[in-house]
Length: 56
Image (cartoon, rainbow, N blue to C red; front, side):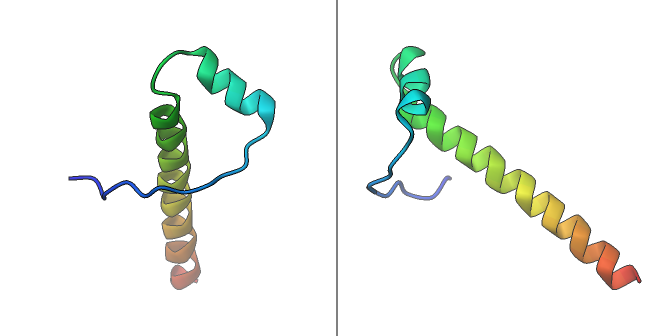
């Protein structure tokens, strides 16, 4: 079960917001998915970096 959503205020560049909105309903969900993918990627990179450092 994903964590509960939180209401926030975020400032985005206008062109970025318009790109997401241009793809129809659910733009906030898509923004969230992109941010989640970024976080998951960074977590994997950080874990690999930690493993390499501990192996040295």
